[in-house]
Image 1 (cartoon, rainbow, N blue to C red):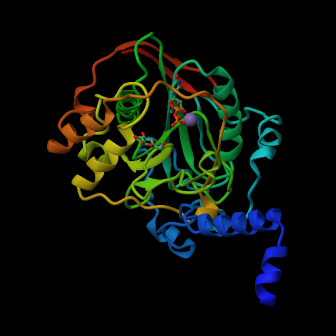
Image 2: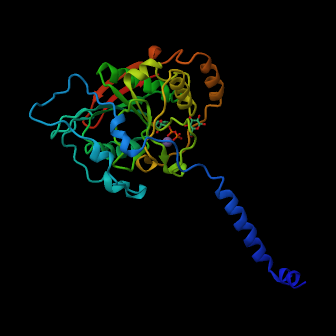
Image 3: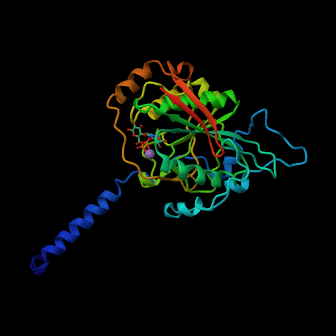
Length: 322
Ligand code: UDP
Ligand code: BGC
Ligand code: MN
């Protein structure tokens, strides 16, 4: 009787508050995983694929570069601090988008392929920020911009295939496939290939720093050139937005390749703001068709018109028409 009386005295607002708390706690459990399977920090050095372009000038007076300190670094920035990391810029040591450390002999050569069309604001930030970031990593790298200069639909996979062919022609052993709007926030995120392909952008602020799904391979991915060739690159069939990265994952899986990742606190990225592209409504059908012949068309059959190859200081630009 006393309990019933007390219950009737509870105000409606209190009831609503209790129900909301209950719902919030229930939903917290449904949030996506903030973690994922990854290589432990201590084992990363062992997994590195150490190989440089054969033409790299190895100086006998210098020691080999080391990577342990970078991989163990705890230095990170918040996404709102990004401008402080590109405002202050000097292009010293950079030409054709390429940089080689001078105090040690690098053990890693990386081609960073950036697919692009008409996002000049992003490109400006990307190049200044990335050179500042990469110059500290003791690696030899070169940034290629694969610039689609036509009014056809954007084709991310085909552009990466075009860039990969150029980088492979220069004998780069490691390709990093990069969106122009993603910037790494952790100094320990070493731009290098591993024994297996590596999904680098596992923790993006736009995705609330959570891996959206286990087989997600979009954003930034590092893959050895011979593995990319083995699976015949990307499919060229995906236009507009979506699907080509899921198809790439299927190709890797079909060729016995496994996707590795660094720990979440080394894999944070910020995505610069942009409006969404038009979605490819056919993407699921094309993915299903491609699954029947994984690697059926791709790197071996790119068709495009090469307009110009422009070595600028901060980037080597490949202007193309699809
Ligand atoms: N992209 C571009 N111009 C475009 C569309 C895409 O440069 O008009 C490039 C750019 O590198 C971008 C990437 O393709 O980061 C992926 O496209 P988007 O950022 O639109 O994909 P989302 O982030 O929405 O998955
Ligand atoms: C699309 C991918 C995209 C992912 C995450 C998927 O549905 O097919 O291309 O990267 O969503 O946004
Ligand atoms: Mn984007």
